[in-house]
Length: 162
Image 1 (cartoon, rainbow, N blue to C red):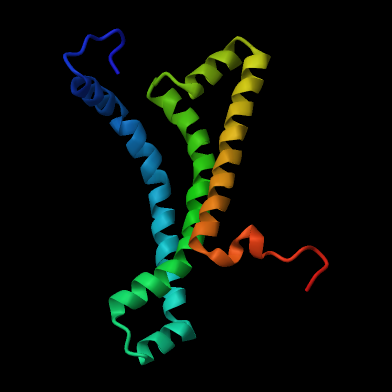
Image 2: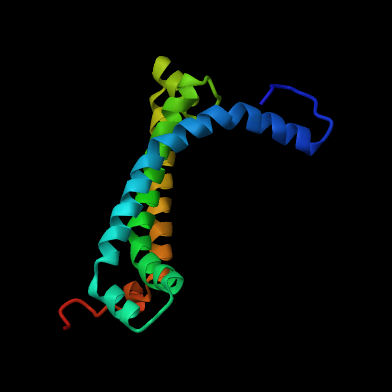
């Protein structure tokens, strides 16, 4: 974003922000994209070999229904896990990308705090990063319950019961 810039409209300001954020976003996205693709592909090929897929095909279900209802449902959990674990890495990657592109943000602030040895500020930044990772893990748990109702906390037996 152009500092102290005057914009004719909200759309001009948004265009300027996107113009300056394109390369940092691209750098952060490309780092995780290959691993996500391989995970999804490997999980899908593993699920396609399972017996319940063969049963669904024997029932005469259309291929699209088998892919959307049976394969996708079983592939989503590892993908969601990877996405939310990647959010923690994304925060760390954002710190590096901000320094490379001289983009003002948490990473730039942390670099400046390290340079002047401002330990309380560094601790505060680590606290914010930690809270972001914990929030991502909590959101992953909430999404797990929506994707697979068997994982709901209401359905879990108390410890010691069988």
